[in-house]
Length: 67
Image 1 (cartoon, one colour):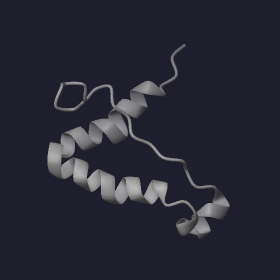
Image 2 (tube, helix red, strand yellow; image 1 turned 90 degrees about the vertical axis):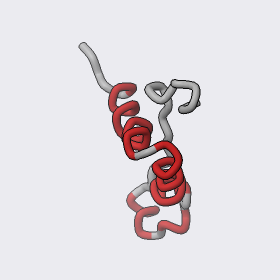
Image 3 (cartoon, one colour; image 1 turned 45 degrees about the horizontal axis):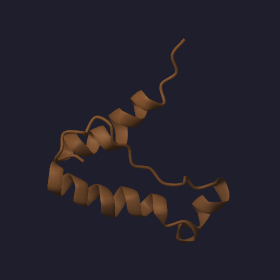
């Protein structure tokens, strides 16, 4: 989708850990895997700008509240 020019519409996410889960990260590997493995591969393949868009800019825009 990035190659096709849809980088401004892609969001990646994973279930967030609860306070209890934060003490035992192995209980929910999705969030650490996203931030460590998937993010690193995305940055290598598409660059830091695409990584920032997918993990920061696009979610911020998608979840922004407007009055």
